[in-house]
Image (cartoon, rainbow, N blue to C red):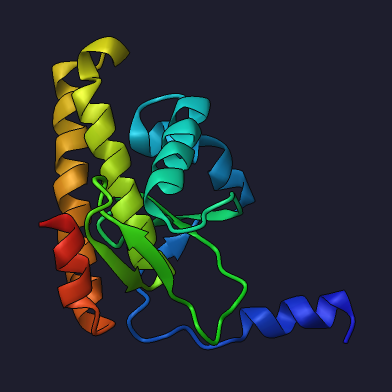
Length: 164
């Protein structure tokens, strides 16, 4: 199969009924991190990497998708090559509770931890009151979105154990 045929067939693949987020295209990726996380792309990417290294078992880097919820909140998630068994072991930030989750839930968990770190660094980052409120709202929107998605994926108990 040639590359054009392969790309066309990928576009025609059915989307799972529980997938209601939109993946950012190449152009949108350029401004995604600063638009959704209110910090520079390098800062956001370093946060993501640091959190992933600490919480994802055997994490050694890789490609992350940038996605937007139906309510317009951005999140990141690791793209996996094993589509037949798309689970990743992840822990809470204290590394005392582990769960095997779908990569999108791992990404939502990572995104929430990124947002928490940004909230804790608001003064250093010189965020305005309005920006702090926006990050706060984003954090709780991701919690709610993650809970909803975890229920649909039958991984609610595992996800709750990491976020509560």
